[in-house]
Length: 175
Image (cartoon, one colour):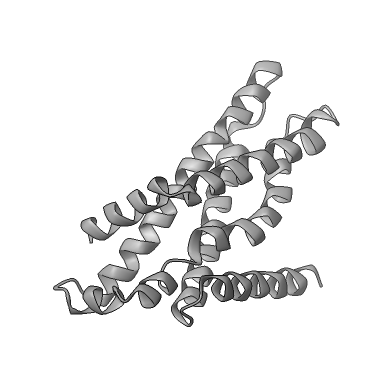
């Protein structure tokens, strides 16, 4: 499983996918940091992540749409399934690699907490719980994206399916 994780993390950062994901997420978080915190003079770090959860709807498919769809399209899916690694380890390896990218992204958002700490005293326990909850939400979105990628061989279709699942989920949670 470790070899799958290394391969996937390396593929995220040898191609622009990982950098685009991190860049888009941090750019949108910067906008939400300004709109939700700086503009109102608030020290509540969790306000930014309430708005940032909508970002996941559109950028997690960038991360997950190629997971299984590309393997199937290129033909390396058969190599993976005939290797001595179990299917569970393959899926977990790909999932953990995506989680590593999300974790790197969340660690970068700690700079915003540092900025807030410079200007005041934000509630650290609430910020940590918010980061943990956002991390869990990200893992749930990754699992939906993996499912969408596993049912098609076209990356774009996998991305559209993932966005559609997220959009329907957001509509039901707001009712």
